[in-house]
Length: 153
Image 1 (cartoon, rainbow, N blue to C red):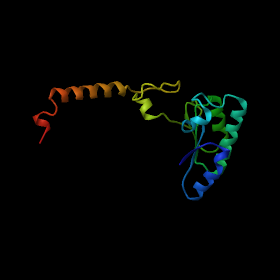
Image 2: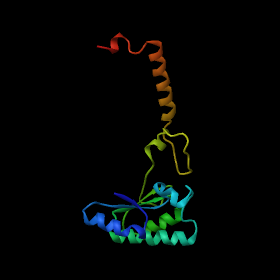
Image 3: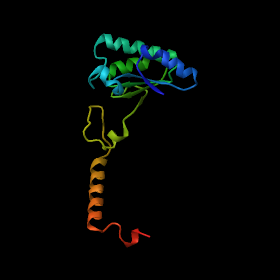
Image 4: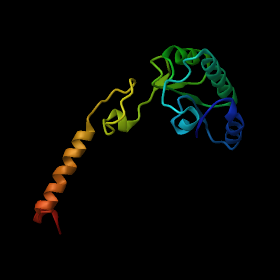
């Protein structure tokens, strides 16, 4: 289970862990709780929020989380957390100082065209390939060339 938040979710973390279910923490930008923050902006730029994030990372680690996702926070802060907590950190828009990295597959493969944050590197342009393929398919169906006699039983 991936749970978002720090101190406020410790009870839930402990209950889930006591049931034998592994838990990964998630700090920084938590898109699923965007209504709390009101924006997709970089989190923990201010000292108070950064210090809370560090405290929360320690609390999650001590509670038994097997790892922590650090999303869209300053790279120096992510490196600090990574150096201080014994569990692996996984960064998404948190710089190269984390133990691992993640990119959403639809974003990295270029399926989503309308989302382009600084941390996203596109490795393909599948949006164009898929759009072209679907357009060709629709044309073939409309012209009657699909399915042909070899493509039916």
